[in-house]
Length: 181
Image (cartoon, rainbow, N blue to C red):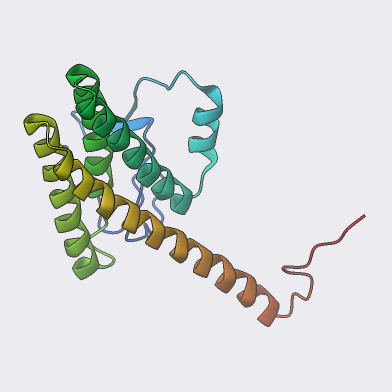
């Protein structure tokens, strides 16, 4: 790992980071701790979606990607396509590691410690499922990832409602209203 970042600060903008800081999957740290562009996805729509997504949306995308790749890996294990299983489960593992590394322990240390333990457990289950060809281990990882994704969706909905409510209470009567035609 490179040099430590200032506590609670965004590495490029110098602004506060939330407890669940999500780095773009298109960006990674090089050996000097600097941000370096990595291989871009072949889908330009996905690249635009990632680059324009909010931190909350990026976290959701990571959950959905981990679930998708773990599910593909599970299907491949069942079909005895072990090379495909390895590639899919490795991708899911990398996403879980990215979520683990994106935790900001300076903002909510207790929550981040719990989430770090959960991500480590999910990662171990994905590795066990890959190495031992164990669908039960993959199922356990998927169960937790789906639960966390659903929880994240509820949090996003709650935040959206609170933001809308905050605007209205501050005197912006047009907030949350749709005008047809």
